Image (cartoon, rainbow, N blue to C red; front, side, top):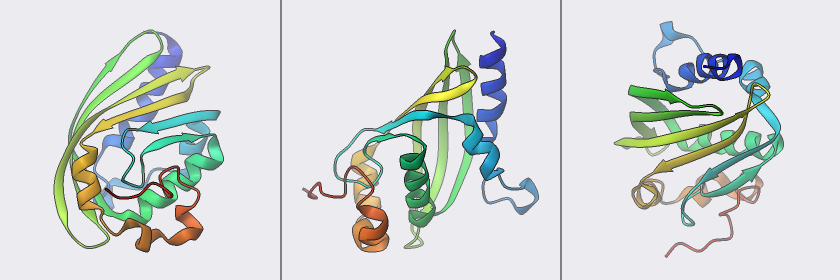
Length: 159
């Protein structure tokens, strides 16, 4: 395993830990931002939910994570499996998420991180977007235009 991939794996693993455990501590926001390449691309499938589309650059990543923080009150990863390649870290994950509406559902997916110069350059997420669309219904009202207009799917119509 290359030193860049090894370093990235160690930085990525805490993202998939328990986020509701007060004893577990919080991820250092600056350290997290430092993990991201300036031109990072975060891509989620789906057109009818807030996270879908491509979020390009650190500023877009900040808007993306701001929306995540408003929409999910709690994310608890209960299992994660990691695999690495020459330039990639892949995570298969299982979680429970609680929305701002205090509803909780199980969730699962896979995330592929492409590493360039020791930083995350590409982040691709694969999850059940139809289920998330239903779970996060009302997201436009929750986020409002100040946050929502900065997301690729703000103008997409719910179908």
